[in-house]
Length: 331
Image (cartoon, rainbow, N blue to C red):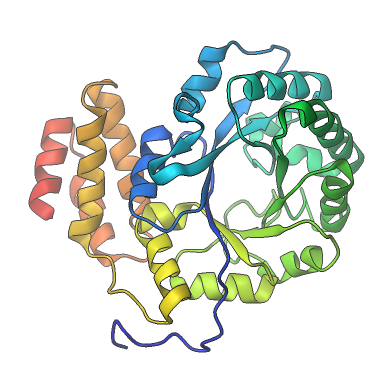
């Protein structure tokens, strides 16, 4: 099929695209680089893990350096700060602290599947207690009313199964969330394919707040299927944008024209990695930068022969200089 061929069927959603948070993967610089590729309408940070402390400003600025620039990144794209925790009082107190620092929206993470987080009653573990989710959101949005910023939430379809999926979604609405993002898998399913986009429609059809579909959107075709099956206008993408940094731009081009942009070349993908290395510029130890680049390169293997080839060729490089030199040669 040619690059300009129309993706059939031609009925196209025209919703917004968000960048999903990925703990330990998508930091402030990565967010900026992905936003520079075009197509993103909003971004959510990695989570601030709330326990029994009201964090000082430096913690929020470390997780969300965009606070220093009006909580926005490249091209005035809004950045929403995410909190993860289970204590309503401490979550609310930290949300108020973030609001005082300039946060423009607070997102609550009810979806993280990490075992350590779940053992400490955070993330997806709360999907077993919809009533607690409702109380947490309600307390937070009441406290944030003077700041006039919204509270949003992200969930999965359940913890071990999908029996409470709708109950959890209804709880977020009753609590006062202004938008709900649904990762279309349970905690037990982790990131195994397929994502159950059709289950998101069951939620969208029962609640009145906007619902965003998330999970397994790695190509333009995935985006069309996800929005069609879920009935959602808006979508959130994580790993798919790391695999193809131009994916959001490609989707927006199709939304507006009905035609495809040419596939993202390996040279373009390698250029994003090299840009990352250049802009870190000693801010991190070389060993850490090298690890982050390999982590991102590993994501670029998704659906890419070139990505797989270069991951295998570069994964054993021991120094940042050697890695970037070979990467530059590959481009």
